[in-house]
Each structure stands twice: as C-alpha cells, then as structure tokens.
Length: 320
Image 1 (tube, rainbow, N blue to C red):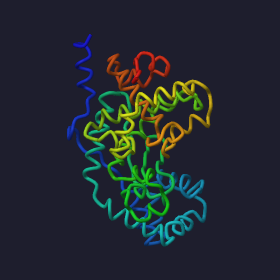
Image 2 (image 1 turned 30 degrees about the vertical axis):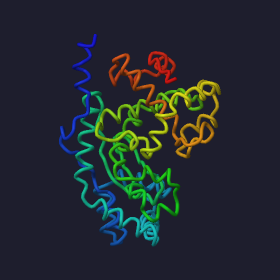
Image 3 (image 1 turned 90 degrees about the vertical axis):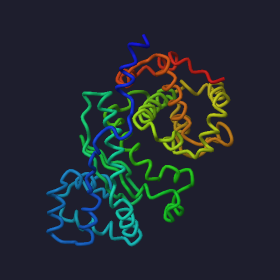
C-alpha cells in the first residue's frame, strides 16, 4: 500500500521555487491613480482595464450596486480621499510597490493545488485597498486581497483599532496563504452544518492542512495567526484541551453561539487560560493531518469527503 501511495504524495508535495511566478494585477494602484487624478479619462481607464474589479469594489467596499450609477466615481473618490485612509492607502501601495516574492510564492502554492486538483481552474489575482474593511473580494474566477490589512503587526494605525491577537495575522507573510485559502474556500465551499462544531472544525482543518502542504516553508504558527509561544501552548496542552472539549459534549451538539467561540481569534479563556483563539481551526488541522497520515488519502478525496465524523474516527485522534 505504501509503495502505491508514494508517487501520489510526491506529486502533491509543495516545492520551493518550482513554478513560474503568478502575476497579481495591481488594481490598487489604478484606483489610487484615479483618486489622485480625478478625471473622466481616469474613470474610463479604470472601467476599461478593470471592469469586474471596479464593480466588485463598488459592491463589497462602497455599497454601490453598479458602476453605472451617476455618483459612483464621486463616492469612490470621496471615500478614499478621507485623510487617514488616503495616508494608509499611499503607505500600503508604497510598501507593496514591487511584489516578486509574493508572486513567486503564489506561483509555487497554486502549482501545488493544480497538481493535486488537475481540474481546478486558476483564479485571476488582484490587490485592492478596502480601508481596513472587506479583506477578500471574490466573484467567479476573480480573487482580490486588501493590502492595507497586511502592513505589519506593529503598524501604528493598527494599534489604535486592533487587539494584539488580531494584529498577529496582519503581516505580509500571510498574503500568500490567505490568497490560497480564499480560493480553496471558493472552490470547495463549506457543506456541513454551520452550528455543529465538528463539521466546521474538519472543514477548516482541511484548508489549513492543504496550506501547510502547499507552503512547506511557512511556519505553522504563522498559518494560524499565533505567536510561537501561543502555538507551543497549544501543543503542550493539546491533550487536556481536547479532553475538556469532549467532557463538555460540545463536539456534536448544534449550538451556533458555542461553535462560534471556537473560531473567534480572541484568546480561548472559556476553555483554558493561556491558550490562543481559533482552537476549532487548530484542532481541525491536527485531526486532518492525523487522518491523512493514517489513511494515505489523496487531497482530492479529502476535499470531497464531507463525513466529518468518519474523518475523525478514521484519524484515531486522541492526544491524551
């Protein structure tokens, strides 16, 4: 059995610098040019070069249903001309003026997904600025991330609006993983029950497992949005945390509020002291990783298996 599985595992293993870089379209720069050079010509150029993204930005960020509305561009320019946002916008574009490392990482990561899912269409990738709002914009095969959400955890403006545990995920190293995760969630939408903890846990665990395989050089704590110390705390208390969760009988009981707490980035003080948030994601990742190691299943089979209980049982996961 192992000899049969080996070629499959090699075919789907992430490889450093093994693929051409994947170009990211700079919609963010085009919008900034319009804001700072407000003119009919700039408006026409934006619509000509980025018709879908302009429409999507209007709906997702400006709450404008159509670019055909007479005040669409006035509202866009007014929104991004607010002094604090305009400063953030300019600094974001300056920080990400050139992104060869990001495009190379995307090339490698999406090449892994293509090897594992040959029938998967590849997205058109863009960058935008939301004003610390809608981080991910998606429509059809179009996917865009908001670069103003990746200015670094010590960025001064973030300290005014976000907690430390939120800022941990607002780093440039998260751009490639977040692009890949956004596309995986688009291609493989959640099929379980939103209020059942195990269903959400296994789904989120699948996404994290694939990210870790696609980006083997990315530290696990970064994929989780944890510090090294927080990740170590999860590892150290894994058995106790899982035992506590089981004793509370929260794994299968439909309870939207309780389930949501396991996917909140705030520290999980409801379960134990000194552990970070998003424990539902972390546990899901551990279970799926154990399942894949034990069964030798392929990534494609994994993503089409919606039996969360079956995956948990086959994993033999019992860290205590």
